[in-house]
Length: 90
Image 1 (cartoon, rainbow, N blue to C red):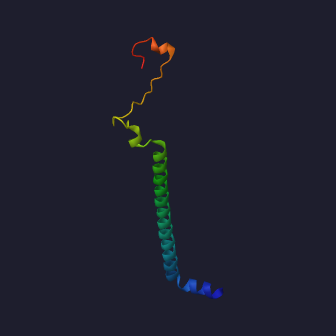
Image 2 (image 1 turned 90 degrees about the vertical axis):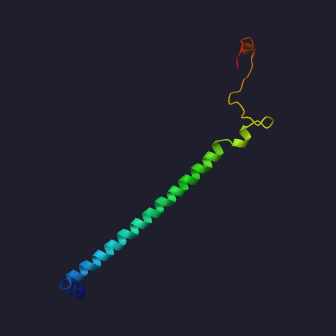
Image 3 (image 1 turned 90 degrees about the horizontal axis):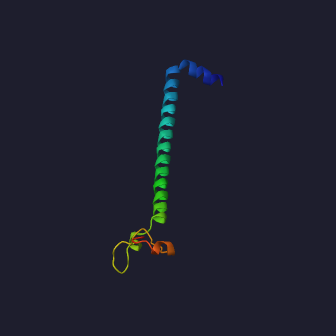
């Protein structure tokens, strides 16, 4: 232990250089790991929302009428006795 203290006291500049290099290496490694983690999280976020979008939004091919090929209307007209007496109820 005393040899280490004696070496540090006689070689302060070298010890500071070694310490600085270790800090720089640790900081750059931490930054790279953090960046890769953020990129991974972004890929997972995009993949999740792509899956959610495919589940929530209906398939465009099933939206069109298979007979006419035209899009089906989004409003469904349900006739009831109250609406059949009014013109243009739908």
